[in-house]
Structures are given as C-alpha cells and as structure tokens.
Length: 86
Image (cartoon, rainbow, N blue to C red; front, top):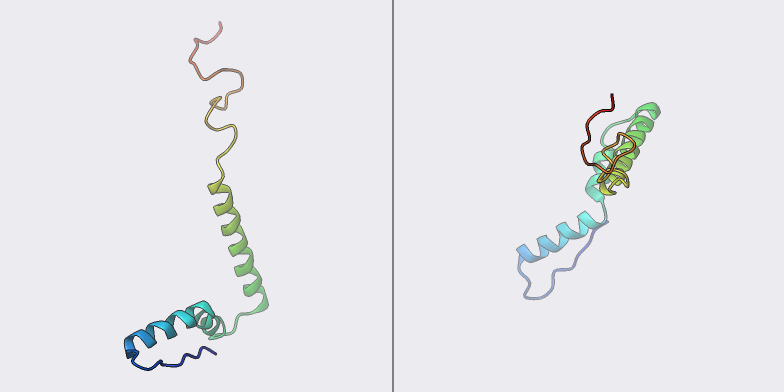
C-alpha cells in the first residue's frame, strides 16, 4: 500500500506527484489491472509465452548479426561483384 506523509509547507500538487510516483514504483496499478478480470489458466499461459517471444525478439534485434555486414550471404565472395562463370 502506497503511503506518503504530507510535509509541512508542501503543496498538494507536490504530494500528489510523490504519491503517483510511489504507486508506479510499487506496480499497484498493474496489479489491479491484472486482477480486474479472470484469466483462464490456458490464456494466462499463452500471454506469458507471448511476452517471452516478444522479449526474445527484442533481445535478438538489439544484437547485430555477425555475418550480416560482410559476405552478402551467397557464400564465397568478398562482396565485390564478379561476372558469372560460363
């Protein structure tokens, strides 16, 4: 439970700002939204797997591929064009 004490001479706006920050840090709103309706166990599992896929995609996107900048992906060359062998 988020609780703040209004200090002497502190404005209501500042106290409200501190309260909102504390609520956000304690994830109270996220918890309320999560428990606002019932999720069947299968739906909960699917949501958890979707979050894991999203997290992995984001992790992969952040790391540059080792082979991408060079090589062109066709196998043997240095990236320079050469005419096809006949």
